[in-house]
Length: 334
Image (cartoon, rainbow, N blue to C red; front, side, top):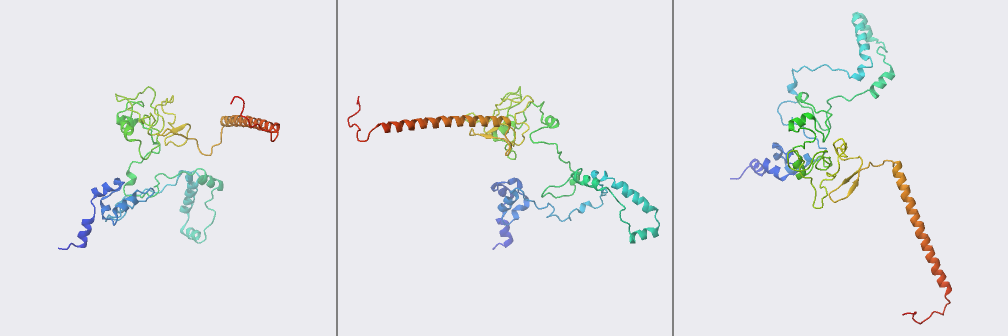
């Protein structure tokens, strides 16, 4: 029997496991992606940086924000930088005056309103919006969409920095103090740094370990530093360098490996300068460059004087010889 078009489409669709095995980003595969006309191209588009995902309520039968009905919405509150201008006191005073008016006076004010009732100093308003204005809390980012119950989720703290662990996280991981290696250090030494932060300065991987610690697989040991056959670090930096007195590496404040002093040593032994582009030279660098220029100019002048002396000697020897009197005999001692 001949199969229908629907059966043919279902048989030609890959399973979720097959699709995950053959794409580069299996973490982006969803159950409904197999029904697309070209599932591989769809996953590729979903993995492109800056791609805005389709809202998650596209396939739901419930209407968007239908579950918000019946929930009391808190009244809107003016931001602090607007409240400090005194506009609330002026509005409350005007509201009190309107409450004392009769109905005839209210109708007359609606027909012929008086301008200038709310008068705030221009400088105060300017400073409020251009000097003291703050960013609202809880704003969504590019491509982000609000969904039901989002305001009840725990928000990420803005004080979190990449590469730094809090005391609460250390306690949860069973780390006694700052000199205890993290549990993922051995896997990082084996497989490399996180893909999202390839230039992250990690002690024991691409940065020196804290003072008083040692490499090894004993209790409290920092594993084995990743180096190649020639002893060069595989992931940049110098894990054998002496740590700073504070207990971190020389690039501890340089979380993403951008800026800062010193240089980055790659796996092939090349040293990459890490000075900021466009920076003005310091006084020491200017002195060094001037000394180098003076030395190079002195060497050039000496070489030029030697060349001129050699040319003068050759010209004098040619002038002493008379044309046609060259000897045909071999030189003495030949």
